[in-house]
Amino acid sequence: MSSSDWSPRTYNQINVARPYKAGQRRFSVYWTWSYPWESNRDVTELDNRFSTMTEVRRVAWPSYETPQYSEQLFLQGIAGTLELFHLSIVRFQQVVGAATNQPVIDYQRIDQAGQKLPIDERILADTDTLMVFGLDHLVTEQEAAPEEIEAIRKWLEREGTTLVLSPHHDVGASSDMQQRQMEYRHHRDALVPRQQRFGRYTRSLMKGLDVPVENRWGLRPATVEGTRNQIAPLTTFSDLDTRGFLEGVPTFNFHPHLPHYAVTTSDAQSIRLLAKQPVDLSRPHPFTEAGEREFNMFLWMPPSGSRAGDILLADSTIFTTLFGGDESLERFWKNIATK
Image (tube, rainbow, N blue to C red; front, side, top):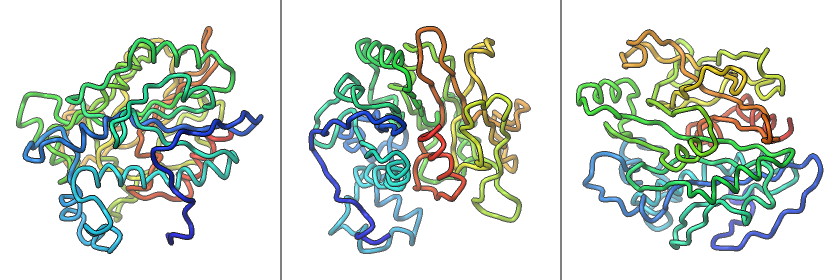
């Protein structure tokens, strides 16, 4: 993509409110991390941190051996890797922006300048779809405050709202070193340590909103035979997908360690499992050794009681191009923007 394909970028700006327009959803992305705390992590620590850009370049060589990722133009520490996430949603912003005729706003809980932005009316007043990307490591102690939970609960009473919850993977939760090694050999991503636990903020938010889901594991999805990273088709439940979120969507994009969204209630009316993903069985994992062959990928909580809005659960990597994308993925983006 050439520089002429990009809209001008802004940073450290106060958002100009987006007026409501019928049929034109206003999307907001909220990264739950503390950018300084994540980027300042000790790089001699093996676990529970993001990779540095130098580590990414080494493992992904030669993908990032181009001038735009050089030390003259791009951050080389952990901060550089965080910037890759920001860049990876540009295509999503373009596709959804074109579908809704509204800009997709990108927020951070604590930004590069140390400015903290909790989820409150400043975000919610001009947002119809709020996407909470749970990429904060547990060790950075991010939690949703009672005031944030209440603000989101009230916001969900408004017709036409959608909350997308995206707690990321939970790798190496066990204290058993051999089990951690089994998980690592299963997902086969050298950039993910033996223990990488995400999503304390999103977990606290789900608990506060009574969302009966836990993010577990980091599972490698099955791929089409004979290919390296062409992800296998989803197992979908179209009879439950009455809104058509997955209409024309046979696959998401490949990511080597996706969370299983375990449902913790027996109330089938409160939450609907809309899609499962076949798991790679070529290497063992505690999840598959327990007899499982697919993991929960996409769930929907329809409006209920005083909650007029929808709640969706899908991993944040589904909305990025960091690990590729295709027409099926973009169709999914358009579906959640327009249905």
